[in-house]
Image (cartoon, rainbow, N blue to C red; front, top):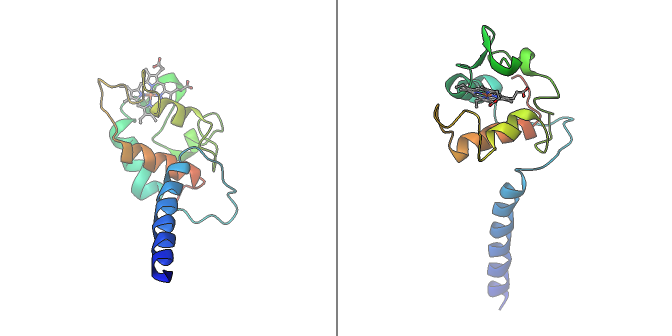
Amino acid sequence: MIIKNILVLLVNLIFFSSCSDLFLTEKMINCENYNPQYTFEKDIKPIFNKYCISCHRSDNAIAGLDLSNYSEFNISKYFIPGDTTQGLILKWIKDVEDPMPPSWFGVMDRDTINMINQWILECAIEN
Ligand code: HEC
């Protein structure tokens, strides 16, 4: 009986901890002392280089957006560190009908979109 109860507890733990990943997608956290899982240089910049900077770089900043340089897009209009409910970058990449990048240009898979989402949730540090 005790073993059965422990098993039920374990199954619940696994179930709820995997669910919490889903809850992370649209969330706000406190950015003080936050330890990010992704880095800008290693994880996010290569994504922007592949999917965005053809149209959003310093000498071709369509819609005024330059994603080739962190300091150029570090503006609350584009993203708010620790808050995935706001900001134009997440709004556009998650837009189903008219996404960024435009679908004729390329399609980012779910994992890639989640990395950007997670980086912003984890305070979007330039690291
Ligand atoms: C093939 C060109 C192209 C690529 C690649 C592209 N964009 Fe865009 N982007 C545009 C155009 C054109 C607009 C203007 C809005 C519109 O009418 O679609 C735009 C607008 C935006 C805006 C709105 C800016 C504002 O101030 O309103 C954001 C945010 C954005 N893009 C993010 C991205 C991100 C992030 C990527 C890569 C994941 C990306 N874009 C890739 C062409 C592109």
